[in-house]
Image (cartoon, rainbow, N blue to C red; front, side, top):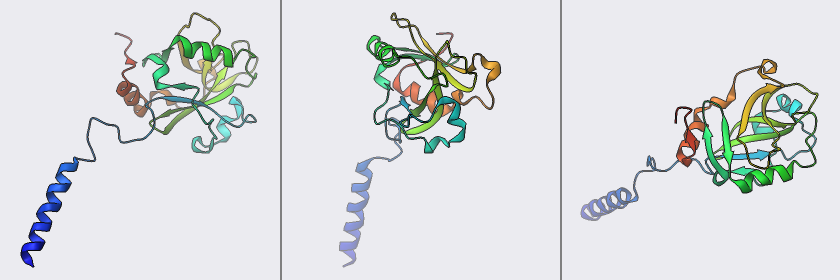
Length: 183
């Protein structure tokens, strides 16, 4: 009997050691893509109303507007990113009818975790905004998009800058799109 227990224990140890560590450094432990930008699904929520919601309470669109494979690069110090030509054209078409004066809210997600919310903003909006913005793209040649603070400029921003979240930086690095200003 003792011999059977001993053999079972050895077999169990060998089986578990063959499985590998659940903390393998080569793979992220979180689910989802390294980078996704979702629009907020509720059309009644505007950019100026984002501060009234917890990040986790915001209903997200079923599919991301921008996914990892549509990013060409992301320059961390400027929070500027380039998209593939197809992705940039998709944004221009999506916003061709214009944006609400009070912004179109979005949420940045990394590996399934919500990092921060902001709003796409029209450069001709007369409404100031104290949150994170991406100015509506117009140029069909596809210039970098900037994630900025406040509208019409950073002096309108209130609070802590959420863009420097290390989870986002790590996810962008994992995806191979993170660039430094000096690169």
